Length: 124
Image (cartoon, rainbow, N blue to C red; front, side, top):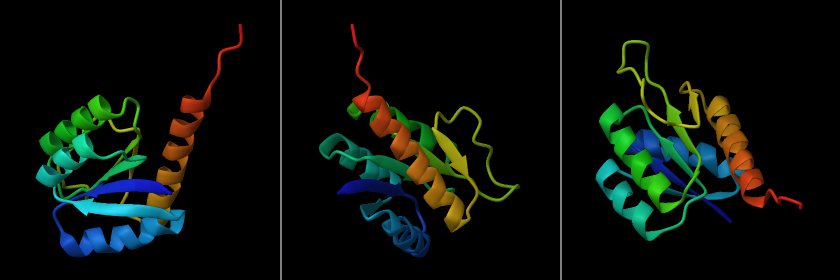
């Protein structure tokens, strides 16, 4: 079973996004940014989804820890409103608007790319 770490600060939004991501037949673990950092060091995840409710600095810190724990783990950053903080410099594999359909598509696409990169075999 695939496991997604969903990070944000709005509990009701995390609950809704968690339900949307369950369409992928995944286990979704919801966490605030500080808790997410510890979870990334203790557990294996197939995808990290960062909500627009966290700061750019929090996004960067989580991505850094995620990549240190699991190199090339896919990360999806959900963007906020046009007036929200800019996500320049955030090293996410995909960014999506807040729509649930786009989120599921981005999650599927990035996890598929990650799995294919893990199974590539070089033939001599």
